[in-house]
Amino acid sequence: MTTVRTVLGDVDPARLGTCDAHDHLFFRSPALPGQELTDPAAAAAELRAFAAAGGGSVVQWSPVGTDRRADALIRLSRRTGVQVIAATGLHQAAHTDPAVLDRVRGRLTELFVAELTEGIRAGDDPDAAPLPARAGLIKVAGDFHALSAHARASMTAAAEAHHATGAPIAVHHEAGTAAPEVLDLLCGRLGVPADRVVLGHLNRCPDLRMQRDVAASGAYLAFDGPSRAQQATDWRLLDTLTELAAAGHARQLLVGGDTTTAAARASTGGGPGMPFLLRVLRPRIEHALGAAVTADIFVANPARAYAVDWRR
Image (cartoon, rainbow, N blue to C red):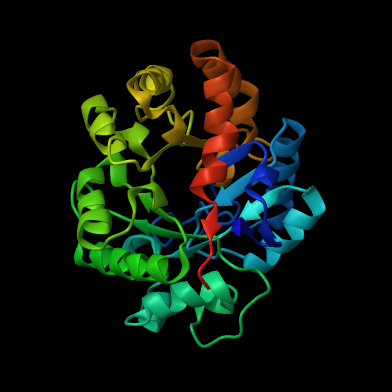
């Protein structure tokens, strides 16, 4: 049976409703001191604001070593009624607790599979007892125009975990780069079907020719992090989505908030936050692309991207 694995259990993909396909409720990085997302009350306020705008589900891309708070995700989902999908996987080394890297080195595939099938490990310890929440996707990360040895090891383990479970693989692209290299590794060398891969942050490198090329593979393209004025996000997003939809890729497009700092939250930080996607961005997309494509982007596409015929 094809289902989406949320922190409260497996659900029919149709139950996701309107989806924020890439965001963070909890996130901590050694590379971003003082910008941690650690407050459960603030996360609850953001989810409630998202739900009030019509949101039904959020995909948290925070992987191993970033203080995912799987226990809190369970409580938040129950209290707010928003479906939450959590990630296993591994970010860049710079964004991962060094102590966690030491614990998981050489055991990535084992850990990813266990978190997808049994439960997320408390303290990111492969030997810890599983929490009740299972991960529903694998998050990994490339580097700026390249794939480091760390990235290749993480992606190799992600591919092995995908083959064992069927789980989708979501990829952080540094400044939107190296998507062709990621597809060559994951799909070309490691045999992951392209429609099981979500390529994130592509709006940060507004190279439409590259975007069309990677879309031709069949992978999903995630456009996330709206209102980051220092990057090519909002001001080119509608043109990019229009071009890709016209090229036949409307069923591969996803959008997400990618809220990674407390200041970026709408409910407590004064930023655009999760509600921006539905209050501001969705009407603009519907005006430019029509209701049917907008429904694909916010409802149908994430339901397919994160749905799995689980093998274990």
